[in-house]
Length: 157
Image 1: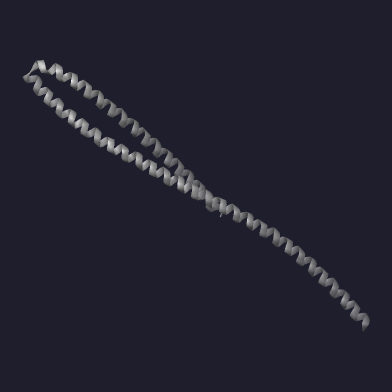
Image 2 (image 1 turned 90 degrees about the vertical axis):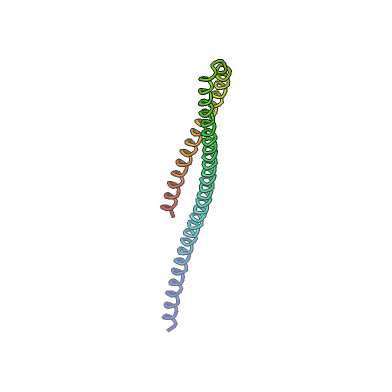
């Protein structure tokens, strides 16, 4: 009976040793898996910060684009007003020319100066239009980059 107990105790001891060793392996694998999860969580956190930064950049670009468009619209309206005023003056100058030829010479000098101002306004409007188009193109490119980044992020997650 004591031999059977010793044999049974030996088997139990070996079984406990095997299970302890197996538990140690499982614990190590769990620690490795847990470290990988922490790495992935850190990466997700970094990506979330990147997405937030990109969204803030996109919002900033949208505001800048909106400001440029508003400025362009204001200048466009101003240009139309100046243009209409100049048209009215030109008509008046034509009537005055028909009445009084000598006064036309003095008035034509004034028209040339006003035409130069109009040309400056036209040049400003063209510059603002180009700036608005460039800002819009930059915003579209950045939006595409954001969409690509978000799609890549979604695939990773």
